[in-house]
View 1 (cartoon, rainbow, N blue to C red):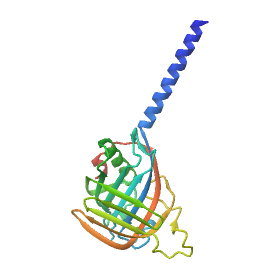
View 2 (view 1 turned 90 degrees about the vertical axis):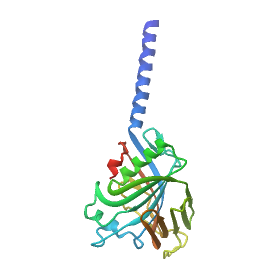
View 3 (view 1 turned 120 degrees about the vertical axis):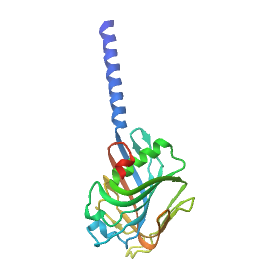
View 4 (view 1 turned 60 degrees about the horizontal axis):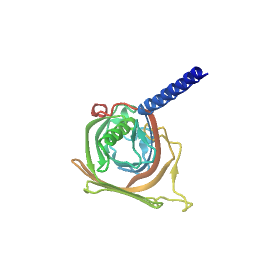
Length: 239
């Protein structure tokens, strides 16, 4: 009886090892993230571009700040509590060719100083998956990103003074003052889903090579999810 029992133990161990290896391989090749967002752009409240072409000549200067919830990962890289700042201008051509590979003006990705090289590469991968734009100019940098989100306001700032954004969630007309204004069932870029756009007036600025400043313009909070297969987060994919 010992031989069959020993063989059974070996088979069970091999099966378990194969299952674990398969799970690790699968996890290493996929990503699943949930991000809270503080976002402001140059449009009036709310983004007309989400409902189709807005004007013959268009720009969209924006500060998008993301904080990833616990459990978010890109492959085997943990992105829990990681922050990412995207300063950008979509330019005037992107809405002529919507979809992956659409043209855009410029993008600057700012990683928090606390993030590791592996986390930065992973965050770049997430940005490329959710915003598959062919940027005319693309660069990365590091800074310290502060993040505050409350019921009536949101505030994010770069320690260097390069960028800042404030959202006033009390400025919109609301019949029921106890509830925010929310737009639901509207796609957020190439994410898998979201909990709705919580509208606000934004005041934000960017002091990079290209500077902009906007007051009482479009802004919102949104919590979105994205998932799929990982791909190399290369600059070529984002140019």
